[in-house]
Length: 255
Image (cartoon, rainbow, N blue to C red; front, side):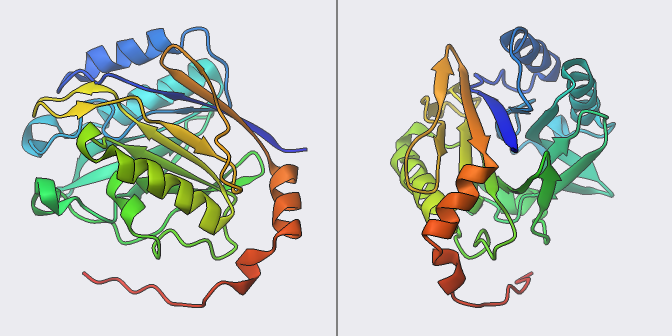
């Protein structure tokens, strides 16, 4: 039986302060056990458009994630601002317990904030495999684009990490539930809390769904826990085989 235990942190990100955020995360998770520790979008700096100032140039965030994964003997996942070959990326890292990693560069950049003028869009959809689960990686604004995340019977679960402000949080909540139901997949949507450097407010709005639309999580302080059973998912899909009737399509890179 494949069971996956996930702990996500509703992090009040300290603006542009990587070391303090690393310390805060370690403290929050000090007594927590999980298979995956999930962190918000740009968890080490906040969702910041001053990429020249904050972007990782020496793998600072990735190095910390590797150390954290090793100390917990678990995976850790979250996104960071990264510079590579003169370009900036909003990069979602998934770091395995042994320090190996995969990543997804955010495909849909938030033009409303000017992210598309500063960061470079990713071109590849990314599904990773961990403990028997196939997991799709997605970042914030990707949530508004259902074609890109459409389950073509190639994943079991999806992780969304975000800095989604309170002023638009109802869209976040509604779309998370829809993405889980339509793709018949476990879904963990992790948002930040607090106030960022642009005075945008973020309320506690992290959610976890089973594909029938039920919210499946436990909460303690700032940590959201969920346990996923792969056999339960397979049984549900077998009973309601809606994915087999999905429309066919081909994704093309618009850049």
